[in-house]
Amino acid sequence: MYFFLLNLSLLDLASISTTFPKATANSLWDTRDISYAGCAAQLFFFLFFIIGEYCLLTVMAYDRYIAICKPLHYGTLLGSRACAHMAAAAWGSGFLTALLHTANTFSLRLCHGNAVDQFFCEIPQILKLSCSDAYLREAGLIVVSVCLAFGCFVFIVVSYVQIFRAVLRIPSEQGRHKAFSTCLPHLAVVSLFISTGMFVYLKPLSVSSTTLDLVVSVLYSVVPPAMNPLIYSMKNQELK
Image (cartoon, rainbow, N blue to C red):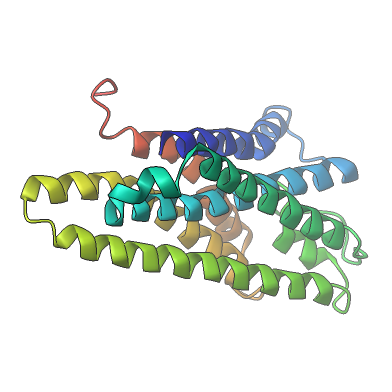
C-alpha cells in the first residue's frame, strides 16, 4: 500500500505542477499568454499524470481487494516485482494515452482564434477552437478513452463490492472498522477524482460557461492532488 501511495504522491505533485505554477505566474503578472509549444507540453504532461493517477487508483483497488479478500495470498500475488510491474503499467498507460491525445489534438486546424477560456490548456477548450469537421478524430479518441476509463471504473466497483461483502462477514466490530478504515481513504479519492473528471469531459459542449468550466477544472485538476495527502493522513496519529 505504501509503495503505491509513494507513486500516487509523485503523480499528484507532478500533475499539480503542470498547471498551478503557470496559472499563478499569469495571475501575478496579469497576463494569460502561453506559447503554442508550451500549451502542447502542458496538455501532454497534465494528461500523462492524470491518466497515470487514474490507472494507479485502479491498481490500488486491486491491492485493497487482495489484502482484505485474500490476505493469505497477498505476499504471493502482490510481491515486490508484481507491484513494480503494475506501477510501471500505470505510468506507461498514462504516457501512451497522453501522447496520442496531444498529437491528435495539436494536429487540428484552429479556425476560431487562439484564446483558451481556461487557466490551463485542456482538450475540450482546444476543440472549441478547431474546425467543426476536424475534431471528429479527437472526439473518437476521447470516446475510446472514456470506454477504457469506464472499464477501470467497473473494475473498481466490482472490487469494492467484493471487499464490502468480505468485510460484512467479519464477526468482530473492531475487525470491520479496521478493514473499512483501510479502504475509505482510497474510495474517497476515487469518488472525488472520477466525479469531477466525468463532469468536465462528458458534458455537452453546448452546456458550457466560462465560470462553470473554470470551477469544475479547478475541482478535478487542483482539489484531488491537494486533498489526497490529507485524506490518506486522517488516520495518522503523528499528524493529529
